[in-house]
Image (cartoon, rainbow over all chains, first blue to last red; front, top):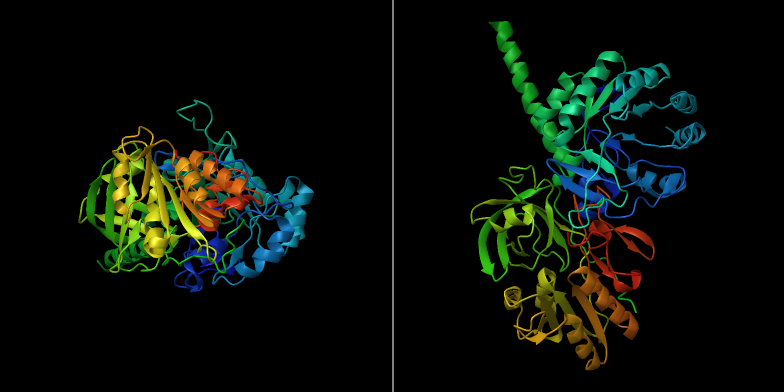
Length: 270
Length: 275
C-alpha cells in the first residue's frame, strides 16, 4: 500500500512513544530486524524535541479498567543526541521510518523538521522539508475535524489521531494524584469508541490519508478503523501487553480481509 | 565500591509473547509458588532477570483489571524449562495469577532486563532478601552454591515459609520474632559484614530494606547490587513508565535494570514501588 508516496507492506504502524525499537533490540536481539519479525509496517520514532528532556518524575503509570494512564513527559535525547545515537540504529530497521517531532514554537518545529531530513506551524514544517508531513491531532480539541482541515490546508500530507485522552488517578492511600506529573494520558481499549468516532469524523472532512489509533488490540479493531475511513492504523498500548501485537493484528486483519474477499466473490458469482 | 561486570548479564528473550503451561501451584505459607513449563524459552535466564506474566484466560476481570501483564523475577529454572515464580495475592493481577491451576495457559515474555553480575574475585557473596523479594536470590544461591551466605527477612512465620526455597540453613529475621531472630534483615547483614573480610552484597526486597542495605554498604564501602521494583507496563523499554532516579538521571528499570549497582543510586526509595 501507499502512504504519502511511501510504499508500505501493510497498514499497521506503531503509535509514537509506544515502542522503542532500540531497546527492543537489546531485549530480543537482532531477530527483531528480520522483516517477518518486525512488528510494524512502518516505524514511528519516539517524539524528539530540540533539547534533551528527562521526562516527568515517577510514578508514571496507572492501570485503569481496560486501559493505562501514563505521564511520561516526552523523555528524549534531544535533536543532536537523536541524530548521533538513534538515527543510525533506526536506519537498520527493515521498514520505512517516520520521525516524530514536537516543538514548543513554530521556529523550533520547523528547525526540527528540517534537521531530521525528513501548521500555521504546519506551513513552516511544510516549507522546511521535502518529506511527507503527518500532523498528529489531539483528541481534546473542541472540533478535531476543524483542526484536521486546517492542517490539510497548511500542507499536511496526512493526519494521525487520536493521541491519549487526559486523565487522572488518585493514590488510594494518600488520596492525592498518583502520577508524578499529576495528570496523564489515557490509552487502551477504554478509549476505542471515542477514537473511532473522531477518526470517522476527521476522515469524512479531509482528503489526505488518516492514520487511526486508539485502543486497537485486534485485527477486528483495525478493520473497524479502516471501515471508519482510516488509511492506516497504529498500535500502541497493546504492544505493552504483547511485544508482537503489531504482527498478530496484521495477521488477524489479513484473515478477515481474505474472508471478506471470499464472501464478496461468492456474492458476485451468485 | 562497584561490581564492574565484564559484560552485561542478559539472556535474550524470544520475540513476542508465548504461552507456557502451568504445571503446579503450591502453597508456601503466605505465598504461592507457581510453576510453568516454558517449552520454547531459553534454559539459561540470568538470576535477577524477569518475565512479564499474564493469565491466558480471564486476564481482565469484571472491572477491566488486570489489564497489563505483571513483572516477576524467576525464582528457579529447571533443565526442562520449567520456571518457578513466587507470588503473593495483593491486587487484581497477583490474585488471578495466584489462582492459576495446572493445565492453564500462562502468557509470558522474557527473560527481560539485566540480571546480577558475578561477585568480584575473592569476595564472599551475601544474599540479602526481604519478603517476596527473596525470589531472585534463590537462583543466585543455586548458581553460587555454598560460598554464598543467605540472609532473609519476613513479616511473619507465614511469610517465612518461603525460606524453604533455599538450600542449607539461611539466617532468618522476622518482624514478630516467630521465626529466627526478631528484627530486620539489615541487622543480620550488619552481623555478617562484621565477620566477613571482603563481602559483596546481592539484595532484593521492599524499597525501605533496599535503602537500608544501600546505606550500610556505602558506609562500609562494600559493593552491592540491588534488584529494584517499579510499576511496569511492557517490560522491554517500550513505555518509559518504570523509570527510577539514579545519579545519572532516570533509567528504565526494565532494560537498564532491574538489578542496579548501589553505587549508582542516591537512594533506593523509588517513588511508587511496591504498589
